[in-house]
Length: 328
Image (cartoon, rainbow, N blue to C red; front, side, top):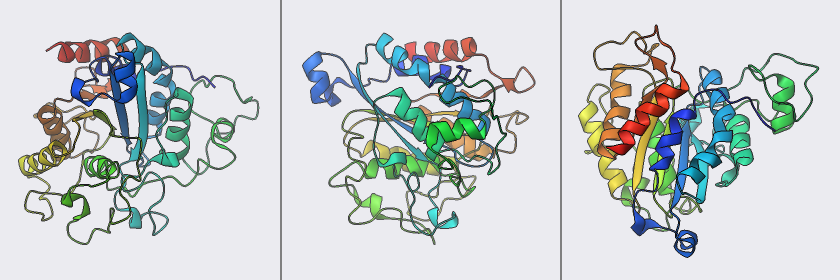
């Protein structure tokens, strides 16, 4: 099922071209073929303000395989988790798929169709009553916003409902816990949580994300909000405005993992002085993304144009910006 491609994943095209960042982490498949391999971990903000961004991302996924092939990457896997770590604040008291660093669908995928299904059907907070299009026929291209009929075709009747997060976005913590779940013997930090947070990783969760993280992993946060993850180097709850302490803590956590992890974000526009395009996102929360991108050799690309009345950024501008950064 094809969707008319809009702009959001254009910001990944050149990023993917440099995603194979470490020949020493190649998988057996890539060693056999001589081509680089990469794991992609999408961390999707599943709050109720993200419908438009999720639609754009889903529509742009048709570019993914071509972008990887053009970059020489023929071995890839992708998984999706969400920004919801406080799973007990959600509609159920247990960890649902996509919460607390678990993978939507319970596994990685290697096709665009499966990736799109996991995004739309398990990682997006849709309105309980979506617009109706009785004339929609399963398999037709999507034009504009998804209808109830389109989502029923893509996901199964009603499966797309009830996937909203807690509203306290912690995509950086979610990414770390997702990587903890890839290992047989995770670091002790994987089992440690701050304050009154519910236990998101415990004995028995090891290798529950099997198939992810065996090679270098590119984390791609997609959010219109800042990060509110809690960890600090002392193990105490993070002070919201103490950006450096939080960035240093997570930089060390990711650096301790067996294979390289780069943390990148497509998020709110913010230049450190002008918050007019933040759209209620906290400055310190966005600064965390920027800090992690810098410390892990990742990228940060804004969703909107600060010089254009906060309009969505055009595809060519986003691609050009990432191409420049990738060549540095």
